[in-house]
Image (cartoon, rainbow, N blue to C red; front, side, top):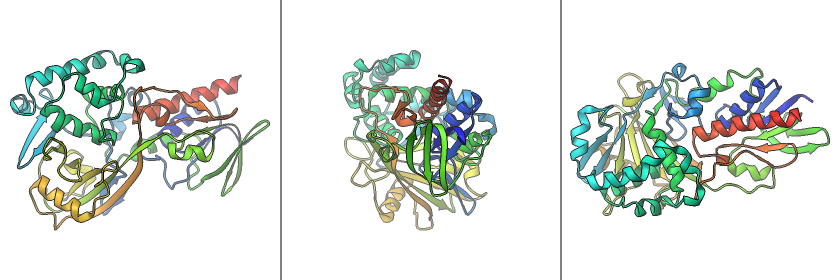
Length: 418
């Protein structure tokens, strides 16, 4: 055998699995079909700008990040703890009063934050904030929409802020995502300040891969996975690789290619990256649109940000980087460039004719869908020697990918010891 463990897929789950198995004393080989590690966590450098594949943030409050990632080495550049909400011609900044005391009075006096709705939202959310374990009691789970309705969270804070923000985070505008899963994500936002590494989100998987004894085999796609009497063999374009056990750490849409398991449902989004010679708005906050009658975006964009205000390393000095995100579960999710530009002009109240498109990424499998009841599953055996892991087996987040990968690394260790 060439290795004890062969890991197929160098996303966050695959890399953490390899690191755990290596730490447990096993020889590990990691295969990656792409030209870089990271899976869905990728960054491209274009004319001095850093453009991630889809708008992503790293939350240092994730326990797995605190435990297994050297966050100070990433030089995290933090976004503001709050949002800017556009309703027609008016914008309102809602910000955490402790982190942004200058916005505290305006936040509390805003038409979007009635006392009664804040009280109801607090009752709905605080139990999970204090005791996160209750979110995993699946028998009490509902859809996010049903849960908020039942809690009496039905005013402008819900309609114009919470629904739009969570739709962008979950890549799901239907409100059908598990309420318990949504509470868990909100808990991490409440406890931490997300940001972007100085070298882009790619710095996260690159740091993880750098600790592996054997370099990841890039541009080495697995074509076939076969269990043999004394181990496993993987056919690649470069030949056959044999190991004692395999871990499949690919996207959920690719799991059926190698196993008899069905694919987990996913949600998608697109991200537009624009270069602007002038800053359209000075703000470290994400901007949400609530201009549609009844709440929600009036155009295709669900959130946008001047990313270079929060993360200066993402743009050359004197220039500005703007992202805009649309959701693929909406009819306008694949809106044209002209429609996106018009929407940006409305949101920022400025012309975009001098803005240059750097990238437009369509990410059809951005996140696994988590309908109720939310179940934080473990990696699953798809054969005697084939283990499947990934955030689709846990929770659709960096936290979920890391914990699922680490659990897989320990699971194959236990198997090999037996």
